[in-house]
Length: 337
Ligand code: ADP
Ligand code: MG
Image 1 (cartoon, rainbow, N blue to C red):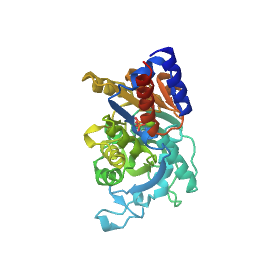
Image 2 (spheres, rainbow, N blue to C red):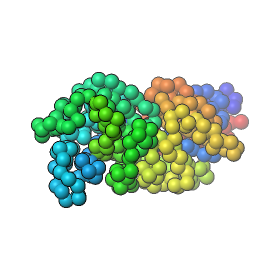
Image 3 (cartoon, rainbow, N blue to C red):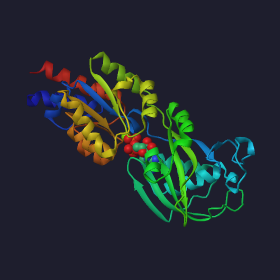
Image 4 (cartoon, rainbow, N blue to C red):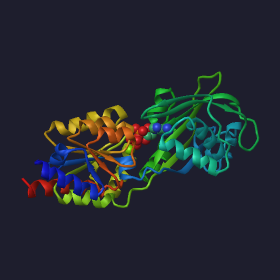
């Protein structure tokens, strides 16, 4: 582009809340043929809220009231005293070591219910899978003794996190699928009581996010221009598809359960076929993907790391501005050449 065209384009961009990091990217944006959106914080608001707490009782089955009867065919044990508050307190204590939006929603949800959330004794973040922490357990929320009183290792996360720690997530499968089909992120809560190596599934918690108002418009406007639209996320397949459906992205264009370090690999493989992809993301784990994309676009409210790695920043956090970026590039470079 001529210096004049670059000046016009970057100025027009700035007036529209689209910051181009220079003439090169202004020139490339018009040639983008595929837009790859990150899900959380990009297509969705990233404002998670705790929506569900499901209790698994001593029989390893979900209960609705926490106080088991023999109705589910099992024997009444002390573990059947477990309530939603017990599951939530364990999960929130473990998650209070994490900055992840999923974690923050669990902690806030617990505090809203008046639960006492303390810091875990030991904490480990397992990126893309969940958290592991040591939590002191002293009795059930109803005041009775918990057979696992003492220090428990608590796990909160996806199926793989439990499997990797030798705990079978399958009894919760029906519960998980029901929540995921609603577009929620469901997380398993398990613990390994001190002095044992017997992991126990204690419950499931779910967080929900809201799709941004303009996400659907952005997708349809891109498709009208003949630009392919994809979504990439670390979230599970079912939740990802439910969100994709809400915004009008085809299920076959969804890449789910992508580990943070693999997002850039996914973008590279999309571009291997000769496609010119614009990656749009907000998070630290989007940065490498933003860097390898033909055009990397960061959401303005995103992390500094993402903004630094990107070529374009959208000041308004509005997915429709992705279309504006392409349109401004197109207009300025066609008019002045
Ligand atoms: P995203 O791409 O949506 O930001 P991540 O890669 O951070 O997702 O996480 C992928 C999945 O790992 C989540 O959907 C969740 O199941 C699990 N996970 C990640 N962090 C946590 C956490 N702090 N607590 C529970 N589960 C988590
Ligand atoms: Mg994100």
